[in-house]
Image (tube, rainbow, N blue to C red; front, side, top):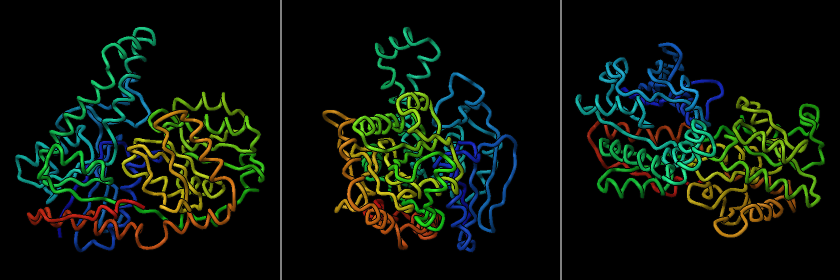
Length: 428
């Protein structure tokens, strides 16, 4: 049996995003394989504590030394992290593991680099977020918040700070990759990026699972939705889930919904999440907007089942867990065809959704046309097709944990470099 440490420099909280939630699912999936691996997932927490999840998995929570939550200017939508360097407590614990896997290049990742290099422990990296894209978006916003829109905006534009910030974190990421024995990605785009920097690096793919018992079309109850959120049963409901800001292009969904309403369509938009674009969304959509904030998974499943279509313009996705959840809930999806979008989840026949190529022309109009196309026709048939696209063993968390993670960790621990996963297993 091997001992594996997975490092996530994010807080473990009830309202955490997909990067954290996916490790809750993998911890659950680890239990049947307790005889092969002991999994410890490290998160940030207010105090030093250990939370046992099952006989195969536990969470270790460590306090941040330089948490971004203590610096108001650094507040942004992607979640708080720790900007300090080496963490002695974590460093001392990592020497007890056979394999260490980082998921970022902040304090946990930096500590892992140093410990693994000195102790000869195999370091694996898993790409879970597009940190370069997020840095390009949020970095300039922090500057304008600190200096004001007039001065800060001029500096950002004149000195191309978005690209500069993104370039800095990209160089740091490349240094981290070079220190690894194996890199795990969730999309071919990231595999190509890794091989440009580290041509000899072994790369494999990590799929995502979905709980088809939790996310179930049978939860659909429009009378409940009307009582709880005031949405008439006859109204078509678009659903978006995620950060309500530029990192997910939430306003594209909002403006497309607004054009439908102005054209006389009886539609509403549900935004499950929070972010700086929530108030502009309220101003544009008024009573047609349902904004419950960040909701627990069970509540999200119920809301999704009540929708008619999932709209997700984001181009910052490495996996797109939420799209799988929407499909499992019976929602056809409308997603971006740009790099970083979730086009891989839409079947070639278009039965479970549409891919929007909005790289030229009127962006909102392109999304409006796609929404109208999906909303028309036989809604029940489209819900059945959406659900069918995620059923089967392909998206079982236990299958993914065993073949995409555990097999890799065992190979790396044994000194092998021959683990690969077919690229086709990345897509839905």
